[in-house]
Image (tube, rainbow, N blue to C red; front, top):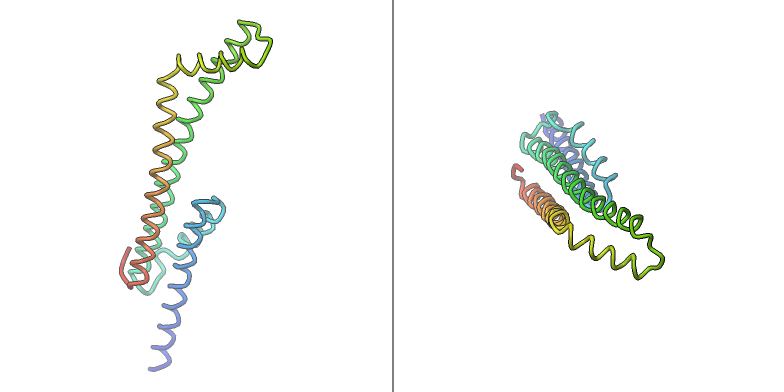
Length: 155
């Protein structure tokens, strides 16, 4: 009887270690995408197979967090790129129309283009704010999850 109890405790400790590893990989993944993908793989492998339901909530929470954060990051990136490409195309068009000869004219054209495309620039700025806020939100959720795991609570 004692051996079964020890095996259960060992299995639970192992599950908890894997969960901590996934959290650390996701936090590092906020700086490098590759580690977050490794954490996601751990989450998918370990989700649903835990002897402790609280551990499963952490894996499911990290999976959900990864996909929501990824969606927000891609959305922000697309909006920023639309703004950057829009301004760049405007500058190229103006440069070819004006037959620019020096850097001063190109800078002046860039400033004029930025002033004419303020809506696109504003959308890009909003997307940048969205990216920063989603990053902070993801970090906050990961830290809260880690605190809850340390307190032996569900996600």
